[in-house]
Length: 211
Ligand SMILES: O=C(CO)COP(=O)(O)O
Ligand SMILES: [Zn+2]
Figure 1 (cartoon, rainbow, N blue to C red):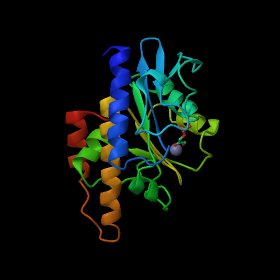
Figure 2 (cartoon, protein in one colour; figure 1 turned 180 degrees about the horizontal axis):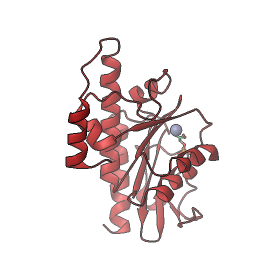
Figure 3 (cartoon, helix red, strand yellow; figure 1 turned 90 degrees about the horizontal axis):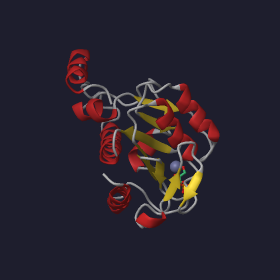
Figure 4 (tube, protein in one colour; figure 1 turned 90 degrees about the vertical axis):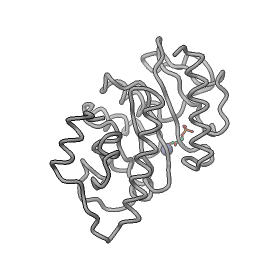
């Protein structure tokens, strides 16, 4: 995909997320790798109304080299690129159910969502909970660097999910899958849902790998 095509693709997918209620107002941000750096949604922009030409452009060090000023969550996005060589896109949302879960106590900080459906295992993997930091805090990026690339997706406490992927469409689909899984988990709260077994999970990871 050329950079011009990727600009169109980011704009199209962001609008689709916005129109389906995955982000409201100017919440959330998206980035994707290009040949000479990264494209990113500008700070305070609505995912529903991006202009492909004015997306922020950063070099590999994160220096702003074109377009509008980048999202304040740039350090968090750079942390995924730095620690996961396969990462080519990052999506951060305040999607309702995942954000609701991010405000609740958890059983397992390293694997936050209950393993109830195969696509959660296949597309999202083990969701890591990270304690609350202020939006835009460099601490968030430092915490993600500390994970050393072990998680494709994290849930920022009292804030929302961040998902990385090998391309922009995969990252967006994984963010949607995460939100759907969070919704199911909320619907099933207190009902002791049947979990996939250790063997079923191992079989999925052997067949599809870990995100
Ligand atoms: O979701 C957000 C902060 O966490 C939105 O911030 P930006 O508008 O700077 O991208
Ligand atoms: Zn946010």
